[in-house]
Image (cartoon, rainbow, N blue to C red; front, side, top):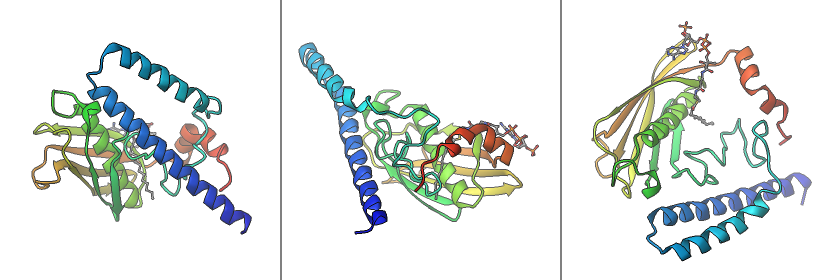
Length: 221
Ligand SMILES: CCCCCCCCCCCCCC(=O)SCCNC(=O)CCNC(=O)[C@H](O)C(C)(C)COP(=O)(O)OP(=O)(O)OC[C@H]1O[C@@H](n2cnc3c(N)ncnc32)[C@H](O)[C@@H]1OP(=O)(O)O
């Protein structure tokens, strides 16, 4: 087996392990949010969680280093808080996007609750920002969100399969506009939350100022 095949195998195995840990963490968060267990059980659980966390904290990166399992230009972000399979706080949303159009699916648990039984409005905005970002990126005009207008028409139910959509509606030089919506999978045409986002493509000097350290610290593929 060649070195490059071995390193691809190692990366695949590590990504699978990260996703497995992400699943376990999401299960922990959902149970910890929903539990009505007595105090002694909570104290015991806290001890066990701290024991599990300690070895993971021994080798860590800082914010100027991408995760070794990430591939920024290939769109792999293992710890993204919306789509990252390794993120404890990502639902995660499964997104498919091409040609300026994106669709996504997820189910939100009790950890995302705002009003009882329904999603927190900030969570809906976060999901839509990500959806619009995928539409914008796949339109060939990647940029950063400079404005996000969100309309909350009906509350978003928890524990209910959701369908998310986004599409680019306008490209005006460096400024790209996209719209998106959250609905239930059962009634995808009945938008619960809609959003319009304005994204701006970075000039080279802006990209260098904001992301220079990350790009310099990039590990070879
Ligand atoms: C295959 C791969 C798939 C992977 C998919 C990955 C998807 C990732 C999804 C991630 C999704 C998550 C995404 C996230 O979470 S992105 C994170 C949240 N966003 C930010 O942190 C951005 C913060 N903003 C900035 O740093 C600056 O504003 C930047 C650097 C972006 C622009 O710098 P600056 O502000 O100095 O602007 P400019 O001088 O360059 O001019 C640019 C033009 O823009 C206009 N403008 C600016 N602001 C506004 C505004 N508020 N309303 C209306 N217009 C505005 C401005 O007037 C000008 O227009 P014009 O005069 O030219 O007409």
